[in-house]
Length: 197
Image (cartoon, rainbow, N blue to C red):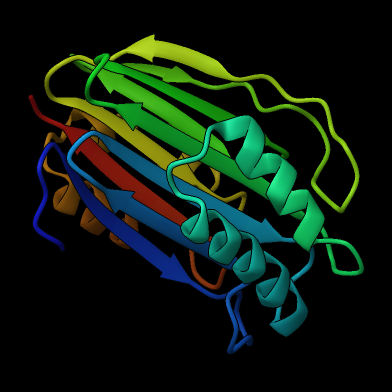
């Protein structure tokens, strides 16, 4: 757990049963004016999936202040000749009090406000070095708003109602870790983020 200005983050990650490498990679960064969180899931599993997801996370880390469209364009460029990825990007702008996110493929993104959950419908497909249509969802920040981003290794029945009654991101992470099924047949990443004014 890092110190934070407005966004507190807690993450859980495990590789698929029998794998050393997790094919999911994630990254988050907070500055005075903004916050970004990225989750990339390399197609398949193991070392080559990790290579693809990590190269996307690395290019986004290098261009962290760019807009979502630019980040997706750069991600596509570095994926030429590699396995594809599904990708979720959340950007929060503290100056405008707004957030924007996109999900390409099966990266789940949810917002929780006063116990009410809203789930982003991802754009179909994956990134693999060529243009892909996607949509960007936008919204207004609210105090104590929670964002949850997760890879497709997280099943819907593991996202219980009780999980999202919690307001502490560490408790969300820990409750999820206890609730998930074992052994799991895919890489698992869940990132819980809470905004406070």
